[in-house]
Length: 343
Image (cartoon, rainbow, N blue to C red):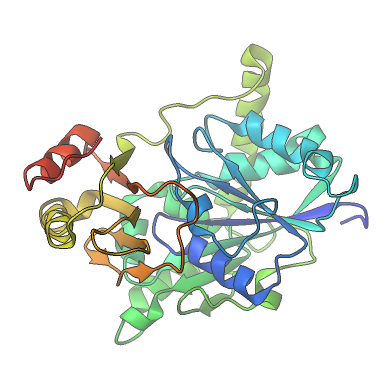
């Protein structure tokens, strides 16, 4: 890596693996003060930008409107190439490195190839490393069911095994899968996002050395596909990359009754838990002056967190549900059945 190149760390991992929690922890440590953080979320409405309260607004940039592995790769190129002057402070570039947090269902190969192969990006940046978060509780099932998760692990330089406190013992099956998919990637077991900053960041240059042969094949395939699409349309669009996975944002204008709200979430979890790839929300509970944040993955919901303050003037309850074969209308109907009207 040349001294002038700005290092990029890609933080990836499947839905609910704890990527945002890791970023919040690093922000609370104070190690992101010279780091530009780009957060991309799947779906039209994202919440991570609001939930990453410890990070200053001019340090955190939401790359929205889709998933950067398919619909808005050109937006990523534009954001990176313009970042030094667009987000300048006092007329000068203030950041020394970049973190890109991908969507939970992102195929990492096109993202890495964009950073490595796009001339506008490679003139200013270098891909330093890929850090992949893996959910210790749901990791085996996720890797069995979702090829995106397999690729996220295989391209990793380092693996963060999260939520290990929710298990009574280590999971030999998951350990074997990680070793097979990413034989050269060291694994760090963490709780509540507590990743070591020195371990997280790397001053090296990303390389396929030590990774399975599939990784090089995937990157070469994305390079060829990019060249074809550049000739046809200017940049690649793959709207069907994620199949029947849909992101729905459910909004409640008025404060919600805590008991009814919890009952509906429990019903969804019991009957469609396997299809609930990710549930996250900021909740305005009737009778409370502070918001509650909820997080869930499939059949596991974490204890709600009470924020110190609302992140913005918007006091509406907002929930983002990323699910397979579960429409927004079905989710709204579930809440309406208990008397909670959502838009």
